[in-house]
Image (cartoon, rainbow, N blue to C red; front, side):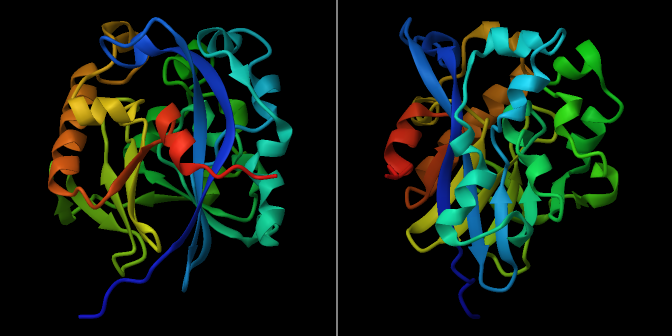
Length: 279
């Protein structure tokens, strides 16, 4: 059996919010940290260019200018640079928005979907559970899910490709997968708890296997020490018990697969380690 294709991967910073480290992990420092929203720009040899999440974009500021969505900015103060929007970084690879064929949405929190409107030609992939979790939600009902309706394309229902039930070869500690391209290069796995229908992505890349863990945890240290966030964050997540189970699963996966680099979307250490400094 031939090896699965290697996917080119470029990790992009799209801006950051401010958070208290002791909220992100129990026993953390009483110190403000920068939680960047990381996006992966991927190139599959047969399926072309894809995005893992869409990250922040300047429209996030307009979308959170008024109540009730202004509460989002009060909880997570934003620091955005228009130059860091994914659409404004594509020129590095001589790409235009139309070159992005598919956006894989880990979950529908605003910091993962604010850039979606910049890719009107891309197919959108998410779990059915995630789609149902935001369907018809506005106002406080949406905000309780970390969702801001104005960030979703108006033709979302026509473009979204709901993923099937995951039934592929399991990842240790994490469970069944879905082989996105049918060749083992991009495998999706459920990471429940933080947001309804959240998923992670295991990618076979030139630098080795990478697991994009979305918000399965906020800090790499949580995985290493199997430590959940502060209980105050229970107010912000979909299922606190599932959050703890997912972190335990990531801990078990890391022990079973030390060859895999795990990248939580907002971990300051992962940002410092993985994101190149561009002139």
